[in-house]
Picture 1: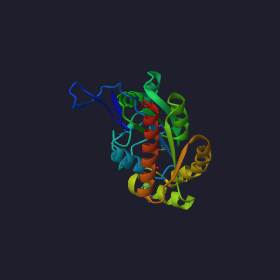
Picture 2: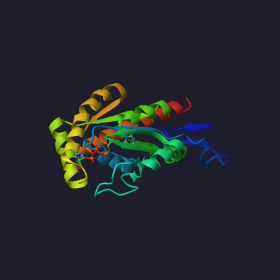
Picture 3: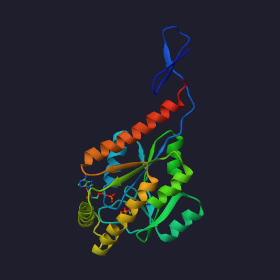
Picture 4: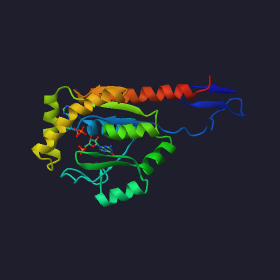
Length: 225
Ligand code: ADP
Ligand code: 5GP
């Protein structure tokens, strides 16, 4: 006899009064892709969401130089172009792309380990990377973060430049702003969910709800009738 609750499965054990949890095949975790123009608030939102839901936030490898406020292994794994090429050759990257003149990629082993353990994984990657991941994991949840206005995006890119990443030159910030229009246009085609990051806590709540909603729907679909 089996009683099915929303997420937990129980069975009546030998003892007529005891209820114990049934062993079940471990379900694979789900991939969540978060993209958006540079400076829109992706890192801030993803860190908060990963903490709130206790899910794994992937740390990418990149060939771009480390900024003053950044930590190797926390913000990125900063590696040389040669090392990046070796990782591509060895098939160690789930996806990779050139963004703003530097290479960025997602380490495959860590993501696969987490998914096999049934954990949800957040990938904060660009649109090119998102397309590659969708081809591998078609049921990945896609979320695009939008700015309120171009002016506000410019302000945030600049704020980041001045306080967080002194490496950026004004020209570099301008390049990022130019790219934003094209990215947003492409997003309508590829992303199922759009979140406007005006109020940070509201944006975090919306991303949390999208992920929880998708996981709940998935869980219900897998349950026995
Ligand atoms: P991204 O990862 O998309 O490049 P960040 O998360 O680094 O962006 O955020 C860029 C800047 O914008 C940071 O200074 C961050 O504190 C700020 N920021 C993020 N979200 C908001 C928000 N809702 N309102 C105001 N500032 C924000
Ligand atoms: P930044 O240099 O501002 O940290 O990141 C620049 C861009 O690279 C952002 O759009 C970010 O989403 C993207 N990016 C970061 N990591 C990866 C990755 O592993 N793969 C891909 N394809 N893009 C990434």
